[in-house]
Image (cartoon, rainbow, N blue to C red; front, side):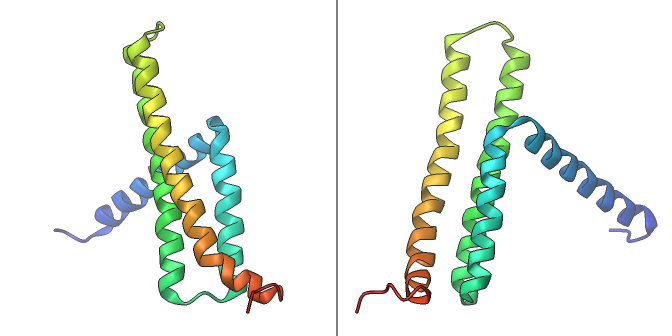
Length: 130
């Protein structure tokens, strides 16, 4: 693969498109703000608690899964709106099922967060049992 200015320019352009997509999600999807708040809060807490690398990476993977689910859900909703602009029961079902994927990802992230962050947070607050 040729690695000249045009290659790097294309990579930067691709990153720009991805950031535009993130701006769009944050602008149009209310739950994305919940994800953003939780992302900042959980990463801040992970740094505060000094999580080891493995636990930190698990947290990052769950955060990425939630954001990916939200992005795919948003794309699916947009495509369904193009293909089926009028109300359609099947389209509604597809949107609801896609939203379920986000719910599963968020629930998994919540459980992982409690399991990983809970004990060191309780210990830091002097509330740990034992």
